[in-house]
Image (cartoon, rainbow, N blue to C red; front, side, top):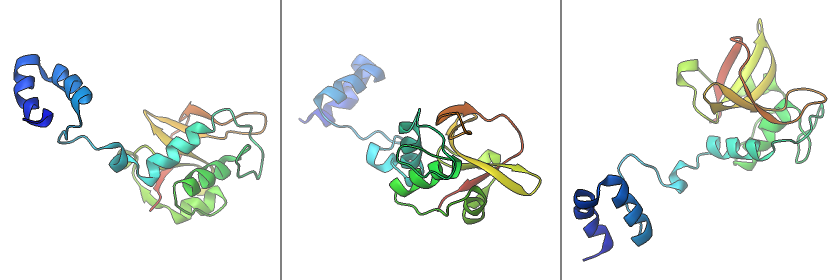
Length: 157
C-alpha cells in the first residue's frame, strides 16, 4: 500500500490537518481545489512577485530597472520578467490592458490612477486593497494601500 492510499484512512484517524502533515512528510498528495505551485504561477502572479522583490529600489523618473524605477517602469519590468510585453507609459499600459471592474480584480492586475480621463500612475495589485508601486521622486518601491477611488483596473493578457 502506498502512502497516498493510506491518506484517507489517516484523515479519519488523525484529522485532516494531521493527515496533511503526514502526507507532506510521506509524499505528495493532490488536494482538489488547491493549485500546485507550478499551476499557480501565472504571468500576473510572477509579475507581482518580481515587483515585490524590488522593494526598496529607488524611484527615478524614466527608469525601467533593474535597480531604479518609475511607476510604469516597474510594471513594464515586472511583466517582462513574467514573459509579457507592455508599452512604456502608464497611459499606454492602460490602453493595452483588458479593462476590468474593481470586483473582478485579482492579485497581479494593474491599477491605474486617473484624473478625469488622464491616467497618471500605475501599480500592481497585491490584494487586500494594496499595490506594489514606485511612488515618486525621493521614494522607493513599496507596498501601499490604494489611497483614492479614482482608479481603474486592467488585466494583462
